[in-house]
Length: 465
Image 1: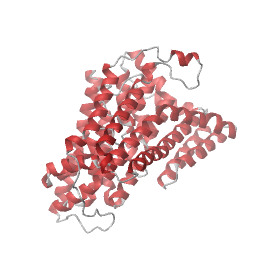
Image 2: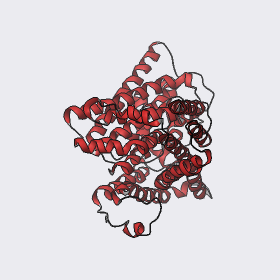
Image 3: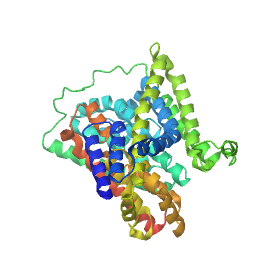
Image 4: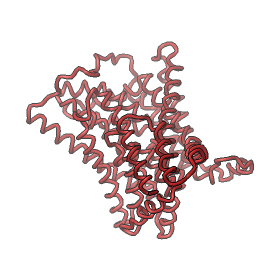
């Protein structure tokens, strides 16, 4: 009965998320449904278990969500993101339209701009370019998704996206973990995605299909005058990457920094400095990026525009962090139930290759698919089972860096199912429907998932990180 309650609550959460209901509201409802079916008292399960775990997640990752959202909004409102997008798209031209859109999204995402901001920044120029090249508009969402939602989100080492930050808190790694595996996996996704989209473009051209007649969210004629040169606009992105690298790899953090705070017996304090170095480094890097972006672009903001951009970014981050924190709270309620022991035992029982990597990949990508969130699914999985996977890895002498990279890449596997918030936003911005464009997004989702297991096989055979 307990296992049935868990599976029922998972199904209901996925169904309601797909129907557009907020997980902030329904995660606790379905967590408590599973809890009551297993005999746990309702109110303590909510206030002492669900909320306690949600608060831990907010404490750990809210600065990254907030500063990342503010940085993205400043880059958008100052026109810096627009300048980078235009330069890449114009530089490659009509004959490489799909590649141009993918690279524009990738450059912004790898530079630390939120993927939601990337959608808004790249779409107007992608639509104009596709219309000029007479490429079907329905291929735009797949192109943007490939650039922003895949290899620069979770595969390439050093990406400052949250999906690459979360594992550092569980495995004591940094964002450059398993660099060769990440680069090879990311390149495989990029190459496979470009091959697929070009194949679709050629098939449409052979059938005589062009851009099409569209009226929803078609971009108006744009004024590109007054924008800074691309190399000036790119300085904040480069700053984030460089400062992050310095603070993560070159700067020596005092391992005793936390000692005075641990002596205060503060709640929720990190176990050691190594668990928070990546978070601290990215906070410093994002602050530097924000200050530089404001300095370079403040004159292009209308009166009061700076306050508007900063406020919009900060407020927008609240929804993102609370969505994920609610999913983490849900996962921890489920993990406390007796019925979960059989489920976790089955997942830990996946011993293909003799390492925890397949077990980890299956668990993370499944939960990411159920929740419709890469960060949410990975956070649930790692909160529940990271210690077991790490113990297993230590037992066989495997580096935790591979656990980090596989978790990060797996989170970006089946997360882009139809109920994913980023997918829904992307289609809405492009003025298209799931019927129009989701087949291409789904193919890219499959490529992402395949790449994770290809990386696992590569590591198992060669031992490469």
